[in-house]
Length: 202
Image 1 (cartoon, rainbow, N blue to C red):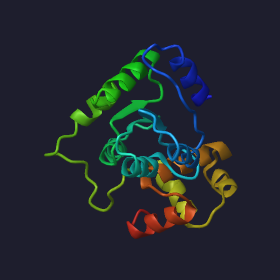
Image 2 (cartoon, helix red, strand yellow):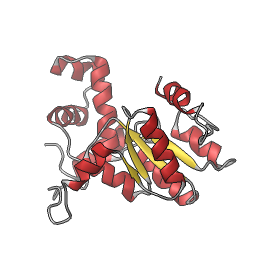
Image 3 (cartoon, helix red, strand yellow):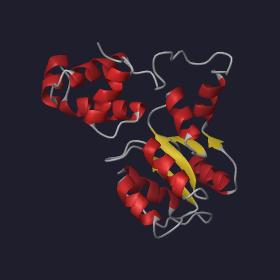
Image 4 (tube, rainbow, N blue to C red):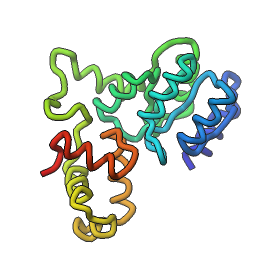
């Protein structure tokens, strides 16, 4: 739905030509081995490889391609991580057509683009007052995400976690994906390893 919505938003824009829609990072990287678009709108939450790792790979292998991150998450450390890995822009998924077009055009012309919401968030965090993250370089997990991470490390299944926390199966899966994005993990094994290594669980 998100992909189709974006295509509908952009397909009639004079300044923009949609050349390809990819449904996973794997499909995207395979496409980039043959073609080189000017700008990529890159979802951070993708199957197989998250947007942070995908952005890092794209900028390493195709440095001329511009990347704009798309996410429902407005977590300062996550935004900084995407920008650090080469993204030229960061948009919230609720952005309207005009803002998306402005972002694509600005980035195409060599500018950086951050939505007003993202810019305001980053302005509140100066280098003199960094986010407190002494134990972990990753974005801070919410209380619910920390609970679910602990249960994942305890080898609980999604159904067991849902039952234990009295929430839906889909809700658990959404939290799991967000946790994997924040910790930069590709799979559950990597998630558990990172959680233990950085002391994110008991």
